[in-house]
Amino acid sequence: MTGSIEVELQNVSKFYGEDKVVDEVSFHVNQGEIFVLIGPSGCGKTTTLKMINQIVPHTSGRILVRGKDVTELDTVELRRSIGYVIQYIGLLPHLTIQDNIAFVLQLKKCPKKMQRERAMELIETVGLPVSYLDRYPRELSGGQQQRVGVARALAADPEILLMDEPFGAVDPVTREQLQNELLRLQETIQKTIVFVTHDIQEAFKMGNRIGIMRGGKLVTIGTAMDIVKERDEFIRSFIGQGAVFSALDTIPVTQALLRDLPVVKKGALVDPADSSFKGWEYAFVLDDNGQSLGYVSLAGMEGPAKIDPEKVQPLPSPSLPGDSLKKALEEMLWGNRGWLPVVSGEGAFLGIVSFQSCASLLAR
Ligand SMILES: Nc1ncnc2c1ncn2[C@@H]1O[C@H](COP(=O)(O)OP(=O)(O)OP(=O)(O)O)[C@@H](O)[C@H]1O
Ligand SMILES: [Mg+2]
Image (cartoon, rainbow, N blue to C red; front, side, top):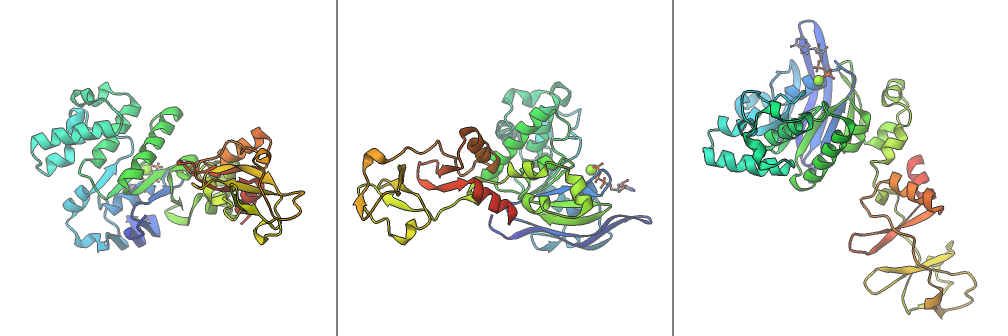
């Protein structure tokens, strides 16, 4: 995340006649961030999204896209420069999948050959066979159509994507698959995404930050952890019980990582009086490449000595930095142990997580 603000709403309201359907909403979205808007049906999510690309003009307040006031930009240009996945997919039924995907490119009068190439590239990106390009939307399943909706939004390679319940119309298994695919894709494309959902699990999973709406107002903004700690009654009842456990799914183990550990180099002289061992019964033994060889008890060591390789106990199977806290806690419970090592994909020892470090993270 580079931190530059790509989208900003300042006290934005929308009236339909006397009805204030969006009420003084303010938030910003950073480059590369997924910002989730969530709330009950009719609370103003879609309207908020549509004001960003000015499909719906706002009544008051300011909307900035890449620092520019949207009312000063050419609306046609603005719309085409922002990818939009609309609620209920909205593929055009009389157009082939290729023409659906390349719709914006066609509007931009890109050469036919380029449209074809881009459509071929994108259909693979979203995990569908190229042969589907010549089909019509009715010849695809719901999940496949949702993928095409994402491909269409990506066609003009926009920096900003607005996604309105993009995975709303599919079964839970397909939905999870689509979510994972988007998260994986996002690692490389790093788009700035405003993502609307009414599913709190999806919000926790997809959002770097989440904004909860109610009756046109944005009532809170925060990370999954911030949200589960909210005391507000509406928010508590909206996210429901067990929310802490879904939030655990979204927190990487690295957040509860203990890095300041007693470590000793293989073959080195170890002094149990060394201050870094204070309060620890064990020390971790590393080789010259920073890979862990195991751990060793410090108990019974009288004075400086070399570690006896025979006494080094192997580590339990490790967590990876990308694993969730939930997964790590499950492993601890199943393995009947209070801690797990965390090891990088290259095998470097990063530290450990423990029940205690998880608990203090949650209590913080
Ligand atoms: N063109 C319109 N004219 C009048 N009222 C409208 C119009 N469009 C939306 N509304 C009203 O604005 C409110 C917010 O609608 P919006 O579509 O933004 O809700 P939403 O949060 O996206 O709901 P859902 O989860 O059902 O998609 C609703 O009460 C809706 O009836
Ligand atoms: Mg909506």
